[in-house]
Amino acid sequence: MLQKLMRGLGSNNIDFRLRQSDFSADGKLAGVPWLGLSIADIPQLDRVLVIGSTLRKDHPLIAHRLRQASKKSLKINILHSVDDDLLMRVANRSIVAPASLLAELAGIVKAAAAAKNVAAPAAVANATVSEAAQRIAASLCDGKSAAVCLGNFAQHHVQAAQLHALAQALAEITGAKLGVLGEAANSVGGHVVNALPSASGKNARDMLAQPMKAYVLLGVEPELDTQDPRAALAAMKQAEFVVAMSAFQHKAVDYANVLLPIAPFTETAGTFVNTEGRAQTFQGVVQPLGETRPAWKVLRVLGNLLNLPGFDQQSAEEVCLEALGADNKKIIKNNK
Image (tube, rainbow, N blue to C red):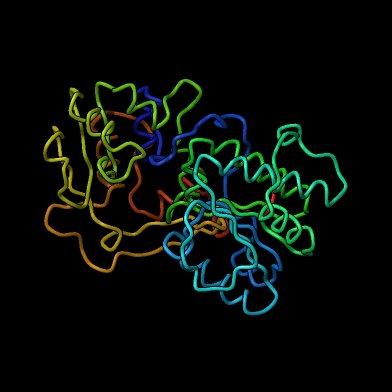
């Protein structure tokens, strides 16, 4: 609804990827970043490489599935810059500085290509293969059902696009599935409904680095939710007009010209598209407090007041139908 409203006003500066810093792959990758397999299929894997994820904090349910599978035949490999306790058996682990993450992954790709006796990508020709990289590559090559997963840290990395490209190359060499662990509850949904800038629009980083005259914030606390909180707050304070739609009172009272109270998820119906591409619909459990309204209703009324076409929805179900179509139980139906 928000991206529809903004495009109706003539702006393509729309983005939900607030913590991302590398947008160099925009327009080059087809499809939607998703898990690459069903969550129910995780126990059938025998090898996994998780790149840049604090699993227990970022993806506790997936961490639980991996933990249970690791008690049987699954061998888990970790490439990260944080050596946290996963409370599960880890076969191989490589902990490197954030600036060395790409080089270490390049070493894993090079070692895997050598083990499989295939040509290594040109990008890893000069890579150094560490002992940990050699062990991780050997583990993946020995597997019959493997997956390579990119976590939040990898997605937020300043070389995220290159990490993704090498992870894809590694998956192709080893026959593994490539997956992206959903950054948030509805990250896949944000891609599905195209809440993204067009070719002429600015991404989230550019909208803050090159401050705009006006901002519309939907459920955003810039000082907490963005890749560069200081730049985000500075952009908000210099803007001529800021509209903040939030269920909570936060620092927007210092810079917003208009505050529109919206209901939290407990007080409205809605739909999440989870990391495996499955639409999950829910209902509000209590009535919205006071004059608060669900965000979709506020956006629909704004569309009406601005005389924009296509803002006639009478229920959250109608919004979902328009956004996802009638066959919306499984949005992503294959592993491509």
